[in-house]
Amino acid sequence: MFAGVLSSTLVNVVISFLSISMVSAANGFNPDVFLPTSVLKRHVFDIGEKKKKKKKKKKKKKKKKNTKRRRHRRNVEEVKKKKKKKKKKKKKKKSN
Image 1 (cartoon, rainbow, N blue to C red):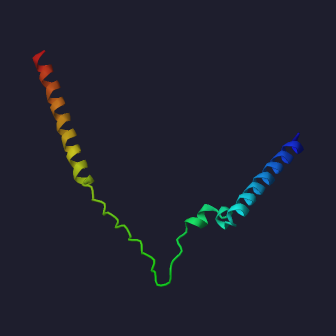
Image 2 (image 1 turned 180 degrees about the horizontal axis):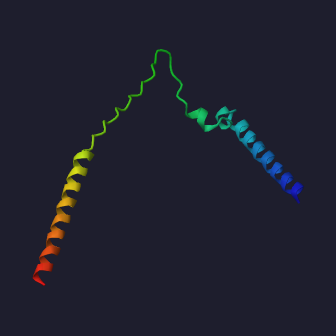
Image 3 (image 1 turned 135 degrees about the vertical axis):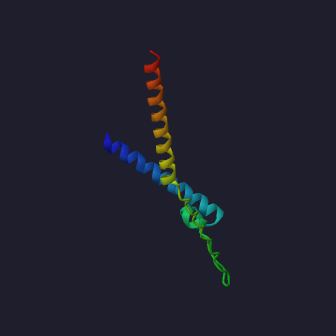
């Protein structure tokens, strides 16, 4: 079974190659058919033509976060909240 699959793929490859060669013979030999697309896409430079330099992107400076100040502010707020809670508890005890 494996040999049958191999032979069928080989036959398909040979047929496709022959068809390409027949077409190229009819139209005059065209080497572009056999070249990979990556080679075709490359830009061929004329004499005197200069390559364009790519501009480097500037890196953005990261802003320094005021973490110390923010932490301090949070801590102060938490302390104030705790004090308020404690005061409220004391008031409730007195009222009872």
